[in-house]
Image 1 (cartoon, helix red, strand yellow):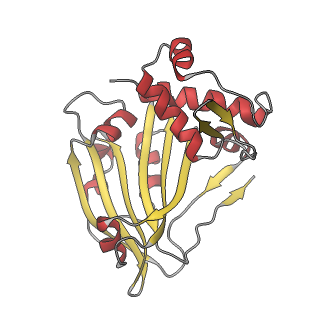
Image 2 (cartoon, rainbow, N blue to C red):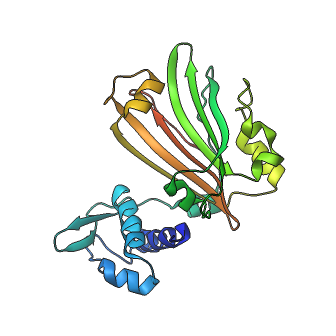
Length: 240
């Protein structure tokens, strides 16, 4: 199983070269085979890294090769932002409440196992929850944590009302871990049947879907996937 750290490093490497201006718009990237050789990585690992960059609009692919996008996103990486600011993030706006619909220790899907760098059969904590205001559902999310965290933070496996609020902060306090690297990916797409049912929408309705990954030198602290219904906005506040 390829380490998730390898494809993250490959993506970070090219992202930082693009953001620094070292790779200018229109510049051609090495071939997948060349990148695989340079990084001693599998072809699938390289493809996964480049797919992430393409989703972020940093690169474009053509039959002739892979190129830096004509209008890449000239923004700070998550690592750079964390070095400069204290990040404050919350899915719950004033007046919203959340309801946990599942909290369990499970063997995760393969892609989640790769993110946490797990061995075959290893478990993680999976929490599924909804947020809303009145009868309106505003967020459907699934968050994942390392299995040992459950013993340190019992509320990770608790679906009682109110146990979701401030949970990430309690995890950090109980584990003594500190987030040193964070990454968010977002894209608009049609809702699948599960997402549509959770948000009370017709299948195929437009949603904003995203995933976040918080980690330190020891590995992943929290991985989450979420989606918002149409006409809702997600915002970030930064404090120095």
